[in-house]
Image 1 (cartoon, rainbow, N blue to C red):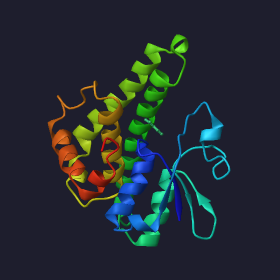
Image 2: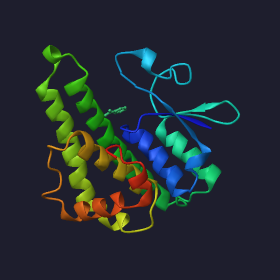
Image 3: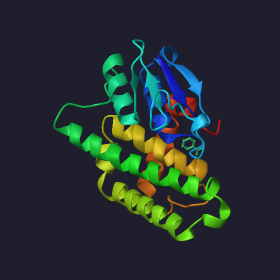
Length: 202
Ligand code: BEZ
């Protein structure tokens, strides 16, 4: 299998964390992609018409995207056990969607601040993205700590990748000071071998 990949992407990291958690990192060849959203020639558009990463080319030649499809596929293929049975599955998927929303807003902030030409940047738009992230992190601190203290699942993977991206690209934003439980959870999660192996700052 081949994975179109940039180590900074929190969505790519979901896939590589899953591979490491499953002990199967060597099953996938990583194909580096620059992924400049203003330049389709830096994107795998022949494999994903949206040009986005991650995109996974299976051994039979078919391509899967986006991260939620790829993680579900790899979990099934590798029997990684990151998707619980129904009904607790719904909680795991809502947590994953919340974490992916945090990552999505954080990537849009990054693009606005570093890819969009300076004269057209909107500080209000950046702050609106941060408000979305801030609300979601507060919701996790208030409602999800019991789930996060349970069995490691795809929601844990996605949340670790989203928080890791905040620290990597938005280190000046203090999300920790009013969220002591999530702060402790994040420190323990970043210490897992799969997260250490996929640290974009390493
Ligand atoms: C980044 O460099 O922050 C980035 C790269 C690829 C996808 C998303 C984010």
